[in-house]
Image (tube, rainbow, N blue to C red; front, side, top):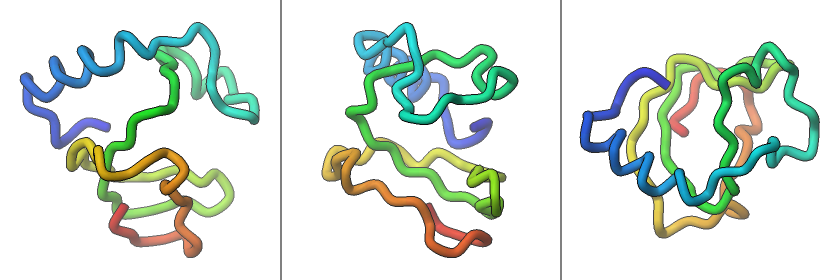
Length: 90
């Protein structure tokens, strides 16, 4: 994600995520090597909100994303995958 972060927001995110670092992917399915290159894995316990323009069919990837902030009112179990690929709001 390349937009929606101030310098301070990046510092805050690093402070939140550093203690949650994992050496391996937390996903049940293996992440292809070309997509995992440079990834920093963390324990999936925090929820953030993003908006996006496209949810790609097949690959299930968000495109044209922007960070909106942390969602302390939500748990990871409340996060969902959009039912209809295409335009969405996060």
